[in-house]
Length: 87
Length: 336
Image (cartoon, rainbow over all chains, first blue to last red; front, top):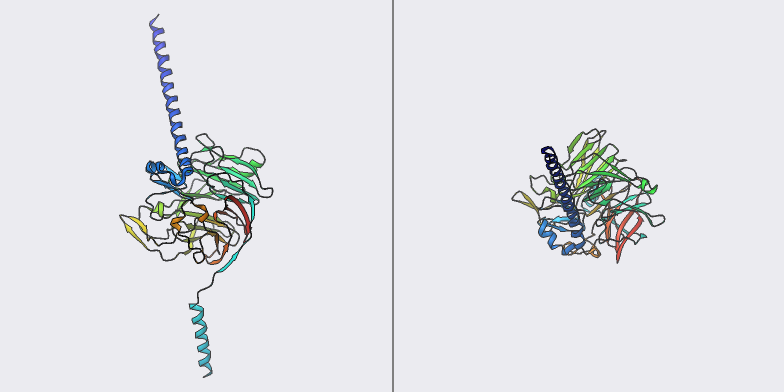
């Protein structure tokens, strides 16, 4: 096995590893974002029993077209903040 | 002597006119049920496009915009998916676009686009993406015309941002309570609507009653024409506005028709349901709509006879669609 062949092999393995990392990161991001979207949907589905949603976000699902800025940095629709003095 | 009587009569007439409380006209209306096939835990936004009724399903991962032909009472199709794809939205908010189109923007990204009902009917590609826009802290967004989109940002120093196709951007407007506060995002959320025939922009707040009417002059200049608002008691604590606990809540829903600004509001003279007891119990929702003229005067209160969740009109007629609760969610239609 020549020195050239060994170097080409190392380069190919590195390339596959880097590409793999990128794919993995991309998949994880999608998973997180999908989870986030479902959190909003699930919070609405659970309505007043969405304790977990409120603990995580400080938002409470409501029937008004109101948005809530969650403490996790995301905005949730059909929800209001638990400290909103008008609710 | 003769003049004394004239003066006396004139004085009494003026006195009575100035002191008598104007009676609000009340009436009821008979509605027609369009469909009871609203299969969701809670319908979101309702829109009216001629004979087409559009309702949002906030849980509709595989389709959050439902289009119903109210002539046949059949659903003609479903649009919009929740997700990360190029034509998908994570946290979609829907409002009226121009013509038979629906403006959709994402509360958590810069994504926005137009869904066309006409294209859906023709089984064509119904989605057109719009240039990215900063949707952070935007709670409502409407298309004023093909060239401009208006956003409501209740946490900003000014409520409105107008963006044009030529990338120009303009902030304008005033909040009905003029205080430097940190919780404006929660306090000043509300509904916005635009009557292009009258060139009037209406901003109705949700957390307390405040109807703000802006007039558009030629171009992109808007002037506050009128604000209808009772005295609101509040205090400022740690830079946050706290409403008095006795403050009456504002309308949850507002729509525009040819002659009226229409809100879903409880008629407290006839219905003393405690608002704090309503929560997600839709059966306790108001059964009444309030009709204001475009100067903000309350003209009449109409009892629809069914608890109401959503309301939708359009500016070329006085016909309304609503989502009511009759054991289950129903879309109803009636004229005012």
